[in-house]
Image (tube, rainbow, N blue to C red; front, side, top):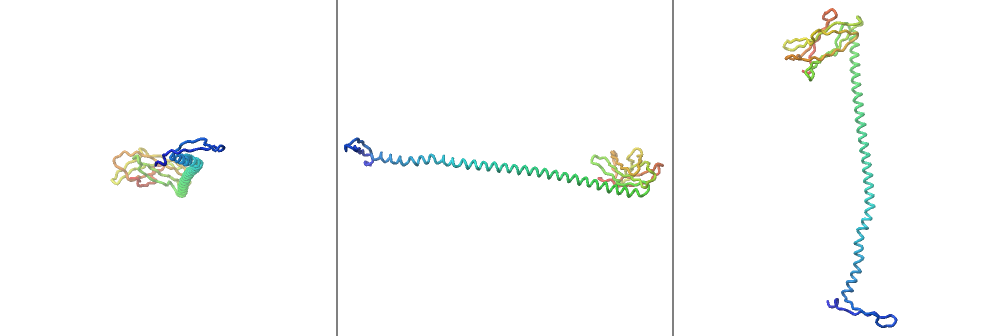
Length: 227
């Protein structure tokens, strides 16, 4: 240990005169520490600047990834927008198709009814089509019928009619206070919504039609639906 800490004289000779120019004392440990310090400085500088170098390399890469992410988000937004537009177009087409189907169904029913009217027109006297009765959710009774005139003479059919409510126990009651009048040339659609106030509930309706002379010309009984 005394080797490292023992002072040693260092003489610097003059290059021209050959005489000692300067002399000083140093310890071996001082020289060793100086050499170690010289070797450590490059490593310290490298360790210091290495993170900054890595950061400088990462910045362009991060910017590139950020731009790619923004581009992907834009494309995703475009795709979502297209999907929304497609869904809206599909819903619109479905609504149009549904409306067209309902229109075709309505026209088909009208055509069938028109054919039925033409068929009944070949007969004589008054005929009844689409005769039905239904209980409504509000407790009212809905009655509907289509009167058709058979033949071309007379030009108009006139008269009266009455509708009676019936049940299995023999109850019978007129739905209208007075007989209803009718007058038509080819056909006429009738519908009445009647408020039912009696304790008993009818199961059938009976329609009686009279001509202009008060003579009964037709009678028809139908069941009430929705009981």
